Image 1 (tube, rainbow, N blue to C red):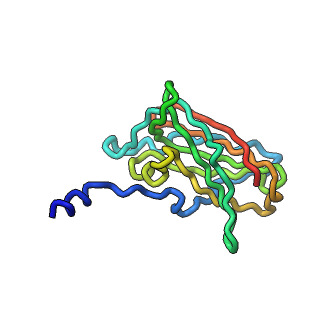
Image 2: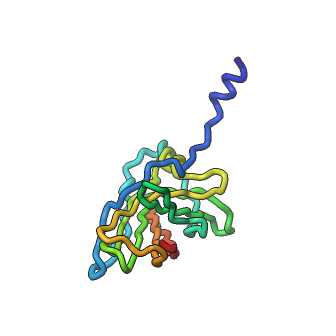
Image 3: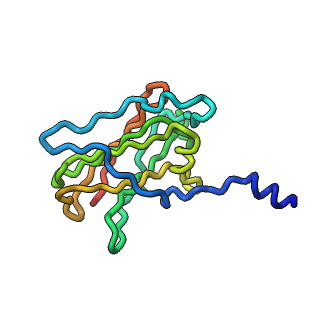
Length: 173
């Protein structure tokens, strides 16, 4: 009986790579400006449900990658490291927008909005093994970039108190 009680108190880590990939919320052509960061749309989250936020900066990890599986659309796993002023891994919370820019694709820009305001939303996207946030994206272009093309990733987080953290990186398609 004691093992049953102990087992029910332990939360099982969530595998964020098992999440259903997100589709773009917005797209723009090359002759338009890139989609802007989003404001704090999750500001109405009750205080007891809010995820903690302590990050002073975030970086798109070099572990980010394009995932290809036979018979399935290509996915982009964007991995985010959140750190405090001492460079230690910490929690982040707010509203994330990831913009993919593929100069040779149409549309050129795809924007993905990822809410990370509640504890549950953060838990679903956090890899406890690597202490990283994993955002699985399913880009859908009318004209795909060519394999090996440079994709520019820009992740922007607007925290619940209105601060903005941003990181840009490159990835080979």
